[in-house]
Length: 491
Image (cartoon, rainbow, N blue to C red; front, side, top):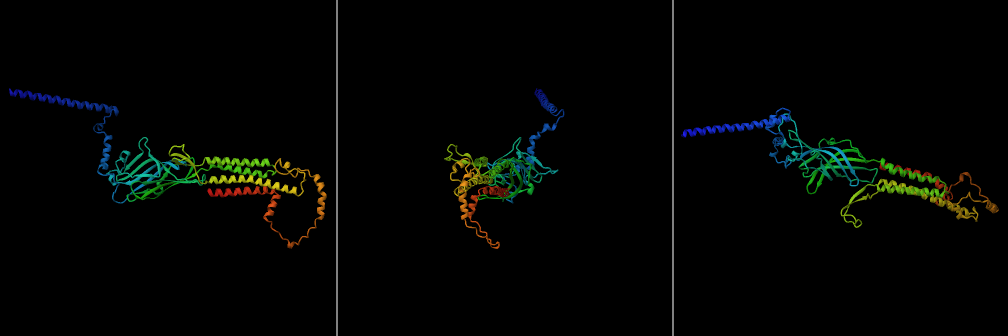
């Protein structure tokens, strides 16, 4: 009886084993069929059996970390910690200069910043000596130089469509780390020669944490380390780019290596020539036209002088309103109570500029042309008053009526026939009573006495037309001399 029971139990266990094995093999066959159908659908009928065994996108980073032995080292420390300073080469390619602000005294530049150094901890074996390139995900797990921009106001790394960061590791441990960054940095500008000025700006690179004992920054290829694309600006010509290097000292941390990207900017002058210099020259030349107008034409000469003076005032006001302005903070000023705290104000540049010198000197020439006619008119009046006192004008002549028209006497407009007959006898008596002139000295004993200042003034007053004659030559020559000195000095 016991034998029959054992025989039944053995047969039942065999049937269960056969049934379970069939179910497990059936599930595996169904999974293979499912994978095969999906592979045929994705790869056009070709079954990729490697895809079944592993997902390469998930294991690639793990293999890279194993290859570079990232977990075996402490990358919070610089390469060669405790030894000599690690050399880090810098290579820059300037993509564009986006803006130059005279108000804020800064510039915005987009550039490719490349770092070169060697970290033997990242060396890996390679049969074909090929490098490996990674993106920003691996950068966060290794040591990279902490280069920053000194005197920068804003900066950011471009992140469209991914962060613009590239890391290339070579089998011997050499590393290339490249980023595309836009930075806004300070540029101290001097407007004393505006608008004939040149501005020298620089972008400064420096390590933030490592001084010269730990990290040595240098230009990798010397002067060839700085390359630029073709850059065109609306306000300036870019004279040239050139790299340089130096040291920066901080009292609490020591000396740091600093690299400079220097570029020289020269302002476009053609716009200011059309808007400022040419109109000013024309106004000065127009003021000289009065020297050729008759000195007795008072309304013509006065109106011309006043018009040129007012026009020059308008030009100076317009230029002053368009001058570069400096932005500053206004913290609780009494005069600016209506402004909120720390409101930004735009203040005009306080010192004298080159354009100010030219405008005010030209304004002085225009003003002197008006003063010149005032002197001519005054001398003419004195001359004709003297003639009246000497008896060359009749006593019944009304001087106020003669000057009412244009402000001076008219010798040719006077009727002097009766006056001539009345004074003819008196003049003949004076001539007869006059003693004969002294005989002239011999030729060898003639002396020439130099006139005194008073005599020269009297001569100029008695011949007021000479003032216009001299002014026609003196004013143009003086203005030409001023322009020669001005443009040779500031150009």
